[in-house]
Image (cartoon, rainbow over all chains, first blue to last red; front, side):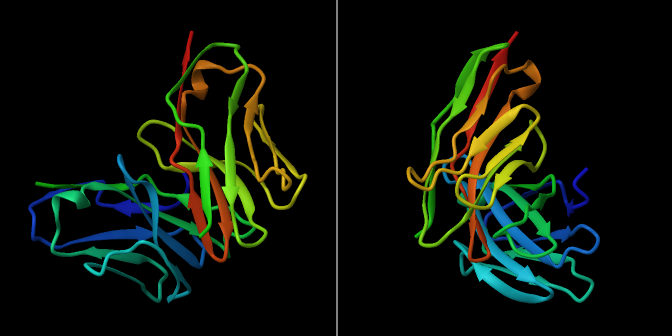
Length: 114
Length: 110
């Protein structure tokens, strides 16, 4: 158990819909990262927050947004969903930066868009 | 941009065989290097890391050495077990980002 909690574990929805994925980081970790894992794209970095502020941005679509709340949990919002958004979305946390530290991953939220 | 290239899978080996999974990187600075492992149905977990050139990371019998001259961080294990079956990801950490390779699926046959 990494200490990172993600909900929901599975989600099935239709194209055009909007969903919210939630992540609770390990106790004391200030950084939260979101990754998308799909069969054809591998593991893609989406976005990072540190203590409530956006710190780094990766290949995140404009239809996607995220935020980190004062209690440090984070939400990833996916809107106008397309079939290609079907993937496993991972949240990870760390106490500081990845330059020297490790990330602790949750078990992921599997999104299926029909 | 920063990138990681790792050996394509899948890789299938017999128990007790020697394992090498190749990983090379391209980076604009001086990254930290990691190997993560993903067991079926689970999230990724750190296997080992190295933060500077010539460092050797090791864990659970796995080893990898940070080679700056060849920009490589190859994963090795002398004698694999069935329980090592998983997907292995090489990654580099730089400028607040962790960039992953595409992953190598390893299957060990008894």
